[in-house]
Image (cartoon, rainbow, N blue to C red; front, side, top):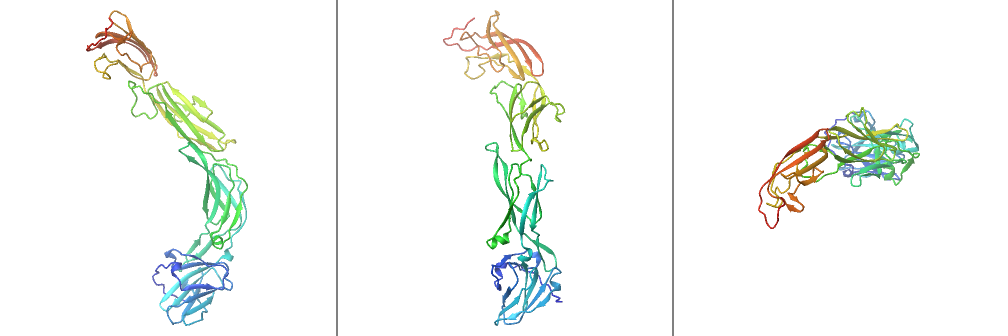
Length: 438
């Protein structure tokens, strides 16, 4: 047994180890630079170590010594016969793979691990979908020989050499620009295992496992495919867009994302993945949706909120068996209490665009009727939309300055009834060629 003094390791990549080469191999030797913590300079993957010899070019004319170690680490290394073929070239037979070698070259030592791939050969038989797959996870059972490939550091620490196998399948991804789900080809790196677990895809697909990277390095590849998988998992994306009203005199809550002043019309939309057969929008006055006031079985839901209060809207979907479900985050819609404020003066004809129309300020008014009279009780204006106003004209002409009277009847979203009366003062303006009506 060889007891070695382990000197501090200075990382040397495989590419830098030009002193090491191999003879007697039909396939090229693959190389892997291990982490510095392993203490190894290089890991070599040999297709089959039988009949393969390692050739080492010494940096001097002194004898080269070779030792072999296994999973116990370099401190348990034993001597290996080495042949001096020229003054500075030495060879030794690998004989067995899956072991480490130490080459002592004077004061210099090279540490490497040899993997015999044939002893760890990948074999793929079949791949089937496990019956325990559910809405969230697909489990693939792979038959064959796909065990991990291990090597050991100079201190006996087990390390894994990844096969870098690839699982290919189709999934759906959300495309914000088109507000839809589109197909995407997925390649997922998987470790060597007889059971593969992955998030359930949102569309029906088959799975293909291919590998490994070592066979690919030798120009080969093994593949195995699963039976066709029918999607059960589902998801959705939703949006809510409020129909805007360009009414400058309508008061709205500055902090209200949805809602504000009634009537508030909102378009709710959803897009779903393949397995979503049942689709429903729900509206409730309870954030827990204890009681659902409105249900609509569709992807699109247009609703006008006319009652004061806070309401909650969500979208749910399920597959045909009802075993897989999706529930969206809820949208909060807040409708404020009603209000009407009436100005008492304006100045039509004085300065265009400045205080030249009499309008109420309002919020959450559902029914509205306004009559305006002159001092003799003659109606000079009438409108039934709170967003409208009076421009100070009657029969197409500006009325004289003075006092006028309004009568308003209205009903708010909170059920409040308004019976308002008051004065409107038209501030004297400079008359042009108009002949005001008395």
